[in-house]
Length: 281
Image (tube, rainbow, N blue to C red):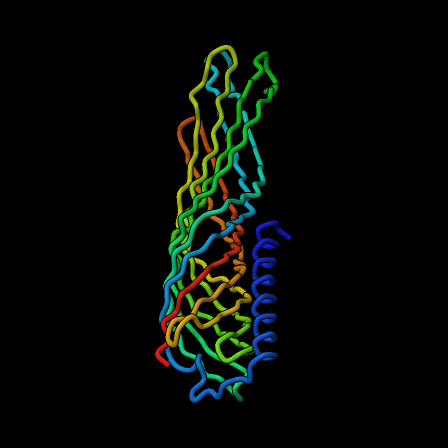
């Protein structure tokens, strides 16, 4: 399990424990006051901020074919440079979100509700690799080739909805679990290049790709919400979103060069947020 996921779950567990302890102590010294209307019933709106860990498994597969036009022979020398790289990207960033929802309390102890949300993320993660090799093309010439690969991922926006099911440990404190769907925008930039030299330098050949993908993910989560005033509540929440993989391939052809680049991405996201809600109860 990623360390950021462990931190988020540990923090939520600590908050859960503190609130349960406070509720038990309060009930031990004071008789619970009758509640005319359940605190969490009705519609609500809110804003939140958070920290996230964005992760992605990326496969970059590139193929460069260079044809040397040999004026001293009747044939051409064909050189092929293939590179496969796997990147495990991860980086922390910030989150701002808004949400609106509605819920009902059942039997004064259980809660069921749903909400819609939107997120704006401040994060971009990238990585690169390079290697140098020597290739014999079957003549007196040896090619020395630096091969470079890089990838960059941005995830600026997310929209979606979720269902929450909770248990009230007191009239104004609720533990809950949730499950939802998330629709996110991913922008991918990748590049692969090589420079072959063999007596006479050859051009620096580069193939690059830039594409945008909207993807639906699913997320489970846990949280705690407690009332600060009659209409304002505070909640702490952790979710982890999973997406299916997606890929894109580009090619470039010229007189003496043909290149292809395939980029495959499988992203996920861990998110811890603190939210303020205004309840129309």
